[in-house]
Amino acid sequence: MSIAAESIPITAPSAAADRWRRIIAIVGASSGNLVEWYDFYTYSFTALYFAGAFFPAGDRTTELLNAAGVFAAGFFMRPLGGWLFGWIADTHGRRTAMIIAVLMMCAGSLMIAVLPTYASIGMAAPALLLLARLVQGLSVGGEYGTSATYMSEVAAKGHRGFYASFQYVTLIGGQLLALLVLIPVQQFLSAAEIRAWGWRIPFLVGAVAAIVAMFLRRSLAETASEESMHSKEAGTIHGLLHHKRAVLLVLGFTVGGSLIFYTFTTYMQKYLVNTAGMDAKTASTLMTLALLIYMLLQPVFGIISDHIGRRNSMICFSSLAVLATVPLLNALGRAANPYAAFGLVLLALAIISFYTSISGLVKAELFPTEVRALGVGLSYAVANAVFGGTAEYVGLWLKSVGQEYLFPWYVTALCAVALVASLSMPDTRKHGYLEGTQAPET
Image 1 (cartoon, rainbow, N blue to C red):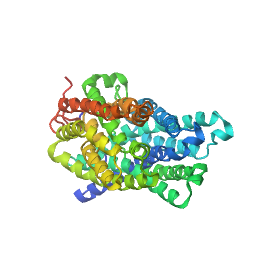
Image 2: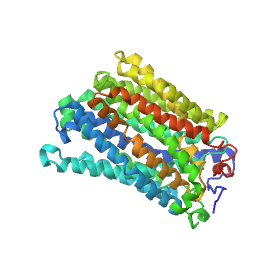
Image 3: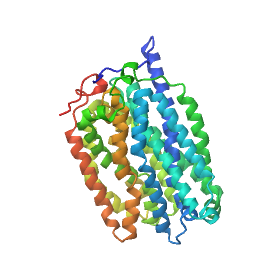
Image 4: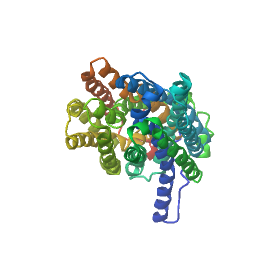
């Protein structure tokens, strides 16, 4: 059974009031999204400091490689999170799923903040760090699909790209907030103090912020209808298998989109320090400014997608990524001038914005209500776990074996997969479930 029409209980006596209610709903949903991604990226950005405390190898690249392995392990929980929270969101409501997800992220962040180091408890330290990352991975695996679905359903027709772009505004904002918390820590504490205990501060901040987001999410209106939640196929793999083409398209988008996104965001700080030889504080400042501009670009590119269509936006992203990735990464690996590096990173992020501004929406438009959260979350999580979460691990491993030059070509090849998917997708302005028309399944 397919339920094409949406039941969104966000109505008001006037257009202005209706628009205001939709904005409030977007803010409430995205507040939790911001906290989720802040906590997740805090690990990546502070790994430069705590890697030696949990993986004392004596060699910086080896320590970072081990820390990146735990980071990647969190991604492998995402498919389970995508399935579990997709089922919850499709059968019990988007709001319930989002509240549970942000509370789990709080628990994982608090656990990391108070963990003893290898010097105190030996191998139990990295084992407990891994457990905390797995909890966070499960949470983020559920967060993406449910928040993308909710924000897409809340968005007004004709302006879905603009509204839905705020998912990545807050996702990038989470990275930016992680950096903004880290920079004062770097300024007021010595490197030795940060390695000893200062790296714990950002995790404590994230745990507190998650509680605030939980209360904001409790006030959200539900977008899933009673009819869709009680459908026999709601949140089931059986129901999802009726939409195999949509699943394959989401996998294709995510393979290239997630890999290049993580390459030029979470991995880029390490790349600038470990490959280009840039000072850690300079790299942090550079990435903070780049991410701020990147965040502000998302609504702009969302509006562009409302005018040219999601399919054309995805073709722009994937084709430009195929052409530009190798020269950009090679130039960044040799960038001695921070201003030149900033320009190169910003160019890459502008290309990626064609994808990230509509990342959740372009996938949500391909699935009917009763399996939308599951379809978006699970399909995304599978590809993201294999290719997105392993971005920095692959980059560091290739560097450790003296083959770092292959990494840009690896990213390019997977962006080519996204290009094939983009050329194969329907024009969701004419064939999209959010618009009340069925996307072709052949």
